[in-house]
Image (cartoon, rainbow, N blue to C red; front, top):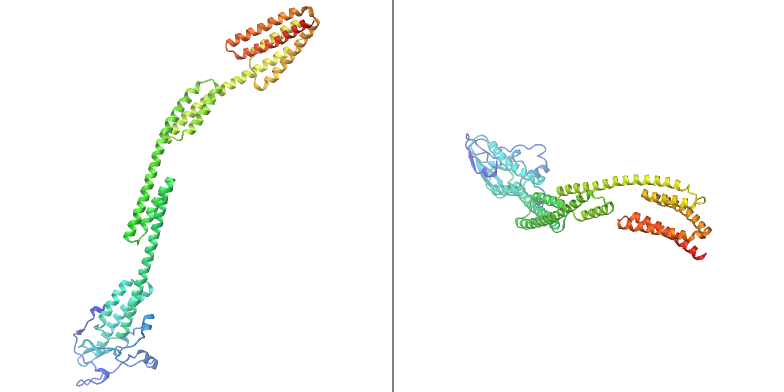
Length: 481
């Protein structure tokens, strides 16, 4: 029951005669009121000193002690006669530092019952104050609520209809007021510290957001981080409205700046990819036109150049880029597959040519210029013509095969030189014959050159040069005979 409900009251019960102060008989009643007997423990000098009220019926507790520790308040219902009395007309009094104060009237039953009733009401009030003390000391109570409740109790003590140690209870209430005020101050400091911490957290988030907005180019990672910052922002409480609005404006501005910069980047990227798409489309069309070319060397070189240009063009939109690359690669693969097949056929042809030339060399090895020089020369001439007609051989065998043929040619030419030296009368005829052969091969070279046949041109010129050397030797022989 709250103190505010405890006012001066009169209990309507059957009339009861109560004692006067000090246990003296009440005039005209024939009834004597006696103080309750003390227990053996309460009867000791120390107990009497601890429990007996000071002068005026109020216990004194040093002010410093009341401020340092919760002052004890004795339970009134144990010995209510220590703190009040009931007079002959049933008026109930409580003892205070200023003297007795009437708190009610008891008109029924024994006076002791009246005192016990008002003592229990004091104990209820004491219990309420103890509950405030417990909650404040445990930290479970709200200091502001405790302060309000304690002030209300203190205001009611002056007229409270209770019997008990009002002075001790007043000190207890003062202790609650001190603790509540200290708790409120501590709560205020904690609130300020929490506010400062919340401001610092939001300030750090704003600084990070501004850094991202101004510097980051990792668009996805940065975008995800800004969203995470926003989620964290929503969990931070306790920032005053003005500061919160200022920080929010900075964060919002940073986020907008990042979004604009990211949008501009991707717009530029889209434009670059459009240009790259057009460039790669042109490269693909050229690559597809080159597929049927059989000019293997230059075309292969151009495909390499196209690949370099493809890489330099940059990336087109992914779907288009993939499709164009498939077309470009297909054209390139088709050309090089054709070239590979052609080279395989050529290599097989060259290998067959090499075998034919080996057979010619075997035949040429049988030429014997010592027995019939003219026949040997004719045989060599025919072998040379057949040799040229066979065509190319694998590159790695050219030197080997050509070297063997030149050795046979040198052997025949050596025999011819020896014959010249032995047959001076025939020297002029030989000179004429050699001149004729030189002219013949020169004519063949001119004809092949006019036809654009480089290979036959070179072969005819080589044979003309050979016969020209022989011609020079024959003319020299004629000049020195």
